[in-house]
Image (cartoon, rainbow, N blue to C red; front, side, top):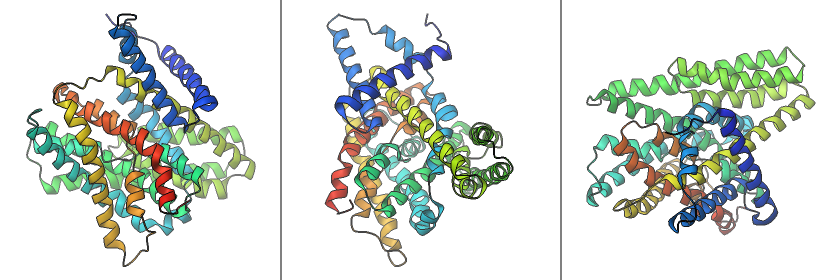
Length: 416
């Protein structure tokens, strides 16, 4: 029988491990924090598996610990709202306006196109390799899982390399919004599968509109209300509590309305980060607010990427999956390039792009914890066991390989 650990015990173990890993990475490895922590956790996992195979240690302890953590719940109803809000808080709305067309198109059209391309590739690959027979709708669900990009690790590299502001804005803006759009697509497809009915275009579009449009409106309402409250107080601790209320209570409020809570957090964060921080509060309060949310962002990302690394110890890749998983990496990269390059090419008459933008946005479109969390929400065990190794392989390659080599790509196209 698995002993249920308390929330305090789980948090204590994860924060301690993240602190030790951060120290080791800072002193000796010197990689970007999120990448360094994930690789350290994976290395520890590999050592643990090796010691287990030669009979020196038991593997039950770490498995029991990870079983106490609902990764999907931690991401969807814990970290995601804080991370999206924190990322949006630092987006300059003027920069966003200057790149509104490519951001809007890549966050929507590219996400839909990526879902279709990855899903189609997975459908044919899974059936061709005789891994299992899955329906087209399930394959599209897999595509939606791998469509959101994670800006966390790559943005740190972009800032360190001194990349042009235009590239930073495109990647950050697209990632923040396409996370929300991809979740809407995922939930819509999942709803259609659970209903067991043939999807109707009209009802599907209505559900997408409700989720996305409702999320944008809810975020605007939350952002406006928070800005009004921030204007009417100069107590710094009260202002911090207001932003925390937006992230926690606002996320819950959007979910109860059955609209996209992630999109609501992005919109609210942008509004507070621009109108609220510039017009509603003092310079000192603005500095404290920025420091507070940067710290929250760093801590949560440290824990999150540590968990991604540890998850390797309980993910089994056997048989045909050992071939399907790496092929999915190529499919995800190719789909990402096509889904970005085609819209950018069509926008050229109205918008001038720097040479290499498609390649940079492809290689900088990292997959992260959100993709893993979406897989873990699935109820059907055989589908989860099929999807999880493939998604994990794409996420690890994305963060470890793309994240570490992204700086070289920026140099190649003279973007540093």
